Each structure stands twice: as C-alpha cells, then as structure tokens.
Image 1 (cartoon, rainbow, N blue to C red):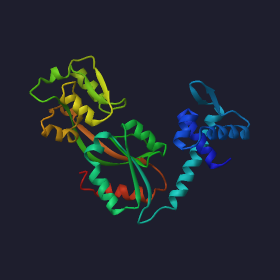
Image 2: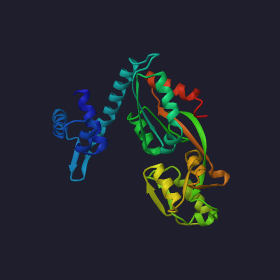
Image 3: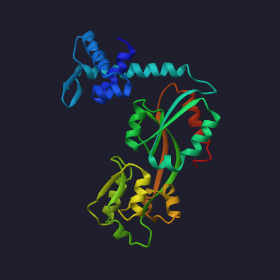
Image 4: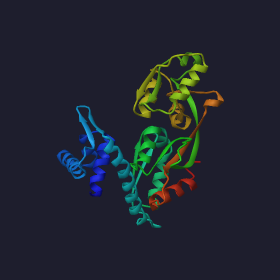
Length: 288
C-alpha cells in the first residue's frame, strides 16, 4: 500500500464520487477507478458501496479512512518539519469570509508578500463553516472566519471587531417596514442568518424571506436597487454608503458586535510560511 493510494482513497471517500476525486487530484478518472479497485483487491474487502448516487464507505472503508487520515496527517507534519526557515518558501493556502477579503485583506497580503516573496499565496472565499472544514481537513492552512470558534483542535488569533448593520436603499425608512422586505444574504451557511432570525423574532416578525447571492457586490447592488435589505459588517459597506448607494441602520446593542478570527489547525509542527503569517497578523497595523 502506497501513500498515493491512501490519498486517492481519502479523496474519493470525502467527495463520494470518482469523477469529483479525479478532478481534485488532477488524475484521469479511469486511473482513480483502477487504483481503488487495486486497493480493494490488495485488502481483499470492498471499501465502497457503489450506486447511481455515488460512493459511500463500507464499514471496512470507514475503518481505513480513520487510519488514512492519521497517516496522511503525519506525512504532512514530516514534510513541514523540513520546511521551517527564517525565509519561508512554498505555498500558503488561505481562506476568508467574503466581507473580510473585500474590505481588509489586500493591504495585509500585499505587505506580507513584500517581506516573503518566495511564499506562494492563494486565497479563496466562503462562509465560516465550510472554511473551518477545509482547515480541519488540511485543504487550507488557515482562514479568516467569524468567531468565536469552539473547537479544541483549532488555534486562533483575534483579528478585528466590526459592527453588524442593517442596510437598505437610500433614504429615510422606518426600520420595521424595512424588516418586512426580503433579506439578501450570501449562500447557505451565512453567519448572519441566525442573528437576523433572532432579531426579526424580537421585532415581532415570524417569517423571513431570504434571497441568496454569491458576492458582496451583487448584494449591495440588490439592496441599492430596492430589491431587499441585508445585514452586513459596517466596514464592508462604508464606501457604498459614502457614495450614497445605500443607507445603514444601527441594530440593538446585543446584535452589533462581530468578531473576525484567523484560525488554523492545531499541530505539533507548522510551516515557516504559516508561522510568519500568524506573527504578521498579530503585529499588523491594517487589521486593528
């Protein structure tokens, strides 16, 4: 059994599909199928149930996945232990909630890159839950998410605080009337939904009409045109408000505060690139 076999098995198990796993691994689909079949023949036990809906693990597959996760994690640590340097190199895979990426991170990443040009930075955006899962699975080295995060295996740095505000089209509006309009949020998993629903219930409203959008720009355009309202961090909407495209309205005190954390997986060994990035965040003037 080779490490590459375990990586292929782990990816198929996570994705539940040969096709998706092949795309992620950049392998030919037939190669992934063959490697899984060879692994099953070697172990003399089926690892997956196959159906038209995809592939799910058998009990034997579930057992193997536990060991595969541990072995691949140890291999990752072994590699990282050779990579520490005062002048870090290699990849640094970061994730961020959309609002932080749009409003805060460009100056930070620009200065970090100027100090450590040999680090290959990449950044994806998503919602807090999915980003956390990617960090836990080592798909990301770290991510900017809404805190607090109560997971024993997650380390964090408190990055900045923001204010959650209700935004609407420009003009003087009665907040209670605004709350009857559709709520424009990011895709499923948006961290503000629970606050919105609680706030609406306290305001005497029992239903919420949610429209989902993929980017901050589209949400701001929708609000500006009168399509609906939204709850967003004040820093992410300040330019649109200054331009007269939207109006913001303060929420009751218990709903205002937003914490943004940088989170990363707790390990015994970290890459130089990640350690330097954490130190950079802690000393950064951009995120205070």
